[in-house]
Length: 168
Ligand SMILES: [Zn+2]
Image (cartoon, rainbow, N blue to C red; front, side, top):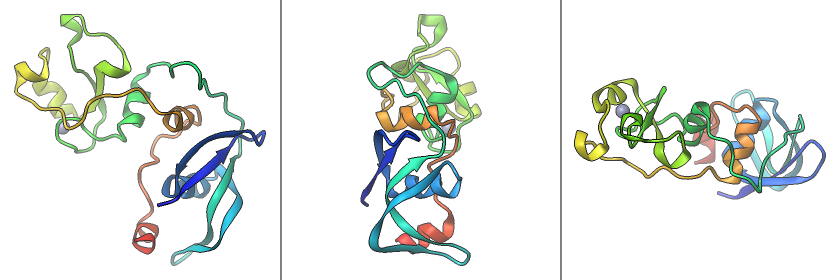
């Protein structure tokens, strides 16, 4: 669906996010709608809001756009939407693709979200050694991810059920 422009609290454009994420930011009181689609409203049992075209963050965030976002475990989980890179179920741990015992580093490209079970099963082995395939390759966070990290957003992938149903 359409992307929504995100402005910083200072009105400076930051990034774009999907409409779904924009709505979640508004519902979580992290952003307000500055400009809405003229004819598109999102309706649920208890909510009726204009589909945001432009939103503005309620608090100013400093986002290092020109630099790489600093690596963190929480950042890896947010980047991967708390989904295990090996099985797709909910992830609560961070796995080093090349294990630290083999010289693997804390970098965006060497770490993925993993469920505790898979992380334990893989142990100090590479995916090849463990016979476990990555469902997706690790990647550098996008500017949108970096912004959401700076916002302290934990769970932005999930759309409220009523909205997922209505938007479909
Ligand atoms: Zn898993």
